[in-house]
Length: 244
Image 1 (cartoon, rainbow, N blue to C red):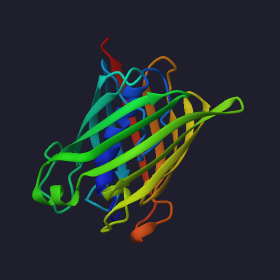
Image 2 (tube, helix red, strand yellow):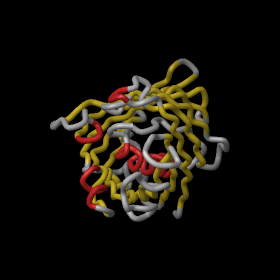
Image 3 (spheres, rainbow, N blue to C red):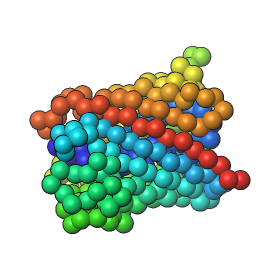
Image 4 (spheres, rainbow, N blue to C red):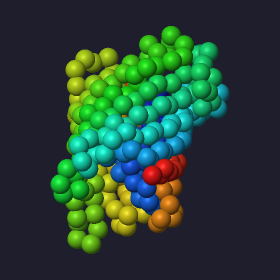
């Protein structure tokens, strides 16, 4: 699917980030789009992301990510650091196998009154791997705001942001808007709609255990079948840990 490969690496990091930011059973607020909430000191997350694609002989690929936090977003700010290994099954036409290509992500975030947060970050920096991987996966800078709002007896988390590269149209310079909305039936079940700046996606997220931070998110990407691509299936699993 054209221009979707960089999102796989990011999404492994997003799954890890979501698991580390809420150390309890909490459904995800997004599938691929960044959110402002993030990991703090003493928390660690790991996540795996997979997506169907016409990209190799397995017709699927994905990424594995880990994330940890430094600082306290309630007091001042925290820095979330993530690392992601791309090409779970290997890229067609590339020499990189799993773990041989990947990148680093950084997100500086602070929590605001009223269950809100703001963050600035970069995905895809510090890339390693083949030259073809590094050239096709440029770093993307973004800013995003997130807020939880009550909806009757339910709740929703809204995210709005702006970013360049993978959050913009392919081969276009400058920045573009992205956003997502997650409706929560309970803290453990959410339905998600998002626009990444390129693709419109939909997903369902479930946290099976109320007191344990395991989150499973399943969805469909590129619902508009943009750039000549098909609708693809995507999913992630994330888990979080606390060391303080």
